[in-house]
Amino acid sequence: MQDIKILRENSDLLIKDLEKRKDKEKIKLAKQVLKLDEDWRKLKYEEDNLRSQRNSLSRQVAQLKKQGKDASKILNEVKSIPAKIKDSEEKRKELETKIRTILMALPNLMHETVPYGKDDSENVEIKKWGKIKKFDFKLKPHQEVAENLDVADFERSAKISGSGWYFLKGKLALLNQALIRFAIDQLVRKKFIYVEPPLMLNKDAYETGVSIEDFEDVMYKIEGSDQYLIATSEHPMLAQFKDEVLKEKELPIKLVSYSMCFRKEVGSHGIDTKGLFRTHQFNKIEQIALCKPEDSYKILEEFQENAEEIHKKLELPFRVVNICTGDLGSFAAKKYDIETWMPRQQSYKETCSNSNYTDYQARRANIRYESKGEYNHVHTLNCTAIATSRIMVAILENYQNEDGSITIPKVLRPYMYGMKTIK
Image (cartoon, rainbow, N blue to C red; front, side):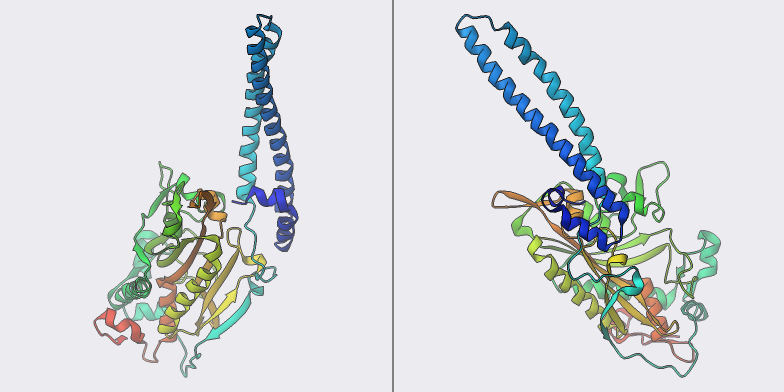
């Protein structure tokens, strides 16, 4: 949620930021909320004056009575003031509701290092890592390889669940678990607290971390309740701190979570619409942090380093992109993506997102910390450590052999009972 103080004290800053996003509707909303806030402050000023007037007149009444004089005229005036205050308060509360709704719709302020661009085609590449392997045979689609090896079944899952679901079997199922344990171990060694969150959230909790209106089309709602299956563990991991005041000495709080995630969206976004890359259910390890404002960009880089280290240990070529203004989304002030090389598709595909939400999300969830008697909102960050299904696609392509077998990355073999190949 946007900070009303920014609009009051530096509205030009927000307007210029919205101009970078090319969002005319949000610019209109920003100007509208400025007018509503002006009306709110006028009402608040009038209420304060009425209370002051009531106190002053009450003292006059007391003085007149003490002197034995008639105070009825002033007393009638005093009695009329509470109704005026109540009327003003009701109008002000209506304005507060409108103001909050608009503040929740306005996007976060972007960091100065966010590059300008109209869409994802203009994200800026920061670095590349890894040697791209040249294959002297024609690569097969990852889902075909998995079915040939009898380690996945997309036909039977479609029969009982519909498209976008899958069975993992045998060594591929073990590979999935190996990726989960590997990523958790990497982060627990770095003193992250491991958490397994609930897989459902009620609407009130969900709205602390995301706009339901923006996500409703991709979220699974539980019929007959106000609960939703989580689309990412970031949401319950943040919501657990809703309306809490944390102690300064507790910060930063660094958590690593594992969960299954559920999304309706699949769609035709590439050459492999069947398989593991875009699915309704997937496994993800997430890095989460709540910290003091001055630490958030340092932690953003730390999270990025952790995610890159995981990709490097898996020996998967990747590139890092700085997400541009037109692709950033409303919550993040800055975001990096790691895109892993998919040799069959001859392109890099997103396997990790790393975002600093500054105080935007915490303001919405009302998560604060106390420092020397003052209360400020924490900054929140989230970063994918591994989304296993996408990484499995990368492994099934980058580690594919001519005979149809798959070499298991060395770092995962201890988690797979010493197996070296899937064949």
